[in-house]
Length: 245
Image (cartoon, rainbow, N blue to C red):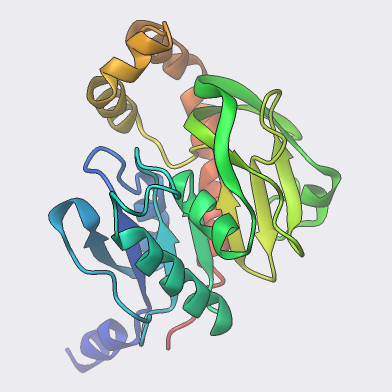
């Protein structure tokens, strides 16, 4: 009992910012649980306040969402999130940004986030850069694979960051800043349930883009397994950078 209690107290914990119910951490949760790392959820859709710092938290994960970085008047928690990201970077704590989270990380680092020429939704190829071959998260992984996307905003590579991935219409799909702050515009965390929930939640956007939910679900059967294999390796490697505080 004493050993179990000591282990529980020694386990690291991360703060996870979630912006909409359907965009959960997916397989990121599995990787954290396998490493005995807890998650402290901050759900903005439930009006949870953004903490001012990470305190004893080992790192920060910022998930996706339908809002834009520049929608701060409508979503006043966004500047608070950027301040928390900035604090995490200053304290040299690992940061992982997914989609909107990557945009917030990029904006915090001084990059402009803006509406792209067209939305990138569904399954589209991603190509790794040469720098990815020596990156601690991406080394020895396929140079090209098909990833799941759902974004309309894009950003330039932040100054001082390392480009890791691109797609045909989006030059900056992934980057690293410093040793363990990463932003990925594409989604590797998804499960079949998450994808089904997203196509249901954002049906109006699909109709606007003349994309059918059925086509996304069909391609999910073709590409999800490989994406989860790649994402699982990437997330497990990032999790190893988390240290108990």
